[in-house]
Amino acid sequence: MIKGIGIDIVEYDRVQLKIANHVLTKSELAIFNNHPNQLQFLASRFCLKEAIIKATNKKYTMREIEISNNEDGQPICNIDNLILSISHEKHCCVCMCIWEAL
Image (cartoon, rainbow, N blue to C red; front, side, top):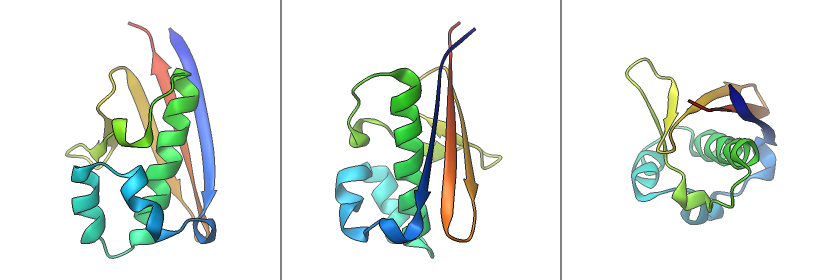
């Protein structure tokens, strides 16, 4: 059963690198600092965290949500029962989160 759905879209040129410390966890910052496209990485994490907050309808802070990737590259999260998706385009990214009830 689906408990919630969240979607968000972010234009890359609206994101500033200076927000990284407010959005990313320590593990995410380690990846961000060595990422070849920091702006796209930060925008996609911000976007996906917004979608998660919308789907779960909970008041998480950005740094309470940690996003990584499984061995297939699919985004995964430290919050259980979420299905996540990120799609990148030239100027923006769109993210979706489905919160499932077990």
